[in-house]
Image 1 (cartoon, protein in one colour):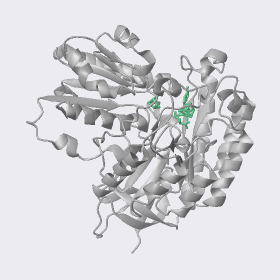
Image 2 (image 1 turned 120 degrees about the vertical axis):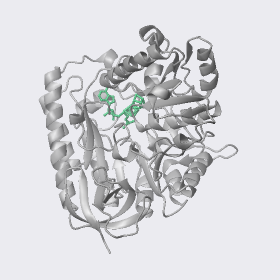
Image 3 (image 1 turned 45 degrees about the vertical axis):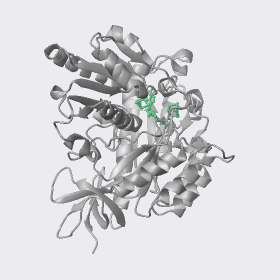
Image 4 (image 1 turned 90 degrees about the vertical axis):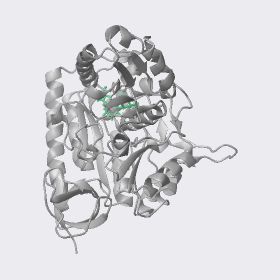
Length: 481
Ligand code: SAH
Ligand code: SF4
Ligand code: F3S
């Protein structure tokens, strides 16, 4: 996330603005005729993939309002920052960026600055008091009112809409793919979260859970495929609880069924999903994954802690043993499945024994990688109301460091086991380090880098690569004739 780099063992999430996959070439939205648009917007996204997907909805709505996109903030008439509240550091990063925008506003009086996303929802109109130069504050369910709010702000008024909705899924809005590599895209299938993990701010910033109309998801995925995309990631805070009943029908479509429907669009379209709550991922989902070659064999299964006592305080609704049994079940049904995790160090009351159990469960689960954080108390959450944030910062950091070290070792160990094996890789573009190499991913979501050689290959092609070497974060290999 926006947290310090040392917290990450593997640079894969969209939360990382410098993620290799997001370094797309100038893509359609920015290449539009410079003269058509009188005004330009610039948008910057922080936080999870949901926020990046939402920014593409926002871009679509702004086009309808006559704004064109720009990658150059100095050229913008309207700056949006799509924010994250998950940890204090994520909010601090946004504040810092806002001070930079403030300078631009000093130079260009007509410039409007808007705050979108989770921080907008958490702080609401208070944002306007705290950050005087912010003109618009718009929560994640209020983007349809963007046009009228921008007009209000252009008229000199401060504009706020942070109403949460029980229905909004933006199902009918075709996202404008910003910074896309033209190969993989995120497709939002649900919004909100009903889980109430005690540490988490998301249920407050994103509201109640709701699932998007299945037919609109299938339409979006089909269009992506027809436009050359070869991979979709179905997104939600808790995708396994997807549940949609089409109007005039009695039976609901479950996540397993949705996965199958998307997989059937084409065998050449890879399907991924994120995030699964361990309590909700069913055998039905696992068997559906196993049945379809094009559903990627990779599950992000955040454990958070390896101690049943801490898991209970976190309100995760599973125990250590239950989680381990789930890992066993995944490996039984799909022996080649990659598993990754999210882990929090130093949650309230965590003792050395609890921490050791976290290290143990990492070894047991043999995660390919993890996103690791130390606990950051968030205002309004159950943990903030009920428990004391009593693990000293230096202890949190030391435990996090130990977690990172275990993960680094596991990642390297797992990658070494892949040496000598061959994987089908979807090419996403040039390797970050050299134009002579391609970069793609295996079904297990591992980054694979290999020489272009004399092969006639292009972005979006599938190729079989034999792994000959590795680093902690990357498999290295060559194209198999
Ligand atoms: N819906 C996803 C998680 C979204 S937030 C899920 O349930 O898996 C991403 C990750 O941020 C969480 O899994 C958790 O590990 C971390 N996180 C959330 N709140 C946090 C907090 N207050 N302090 C530290 N890490 C936190
Ligand atoms: Fe937060 Fe838990 Fe919901 Fe994930 S499942 S978004 S951690 S409340
Ligand atoms: Fe952050 Fe909101 Fe996502 S708090 S992690 S942007 S849902």
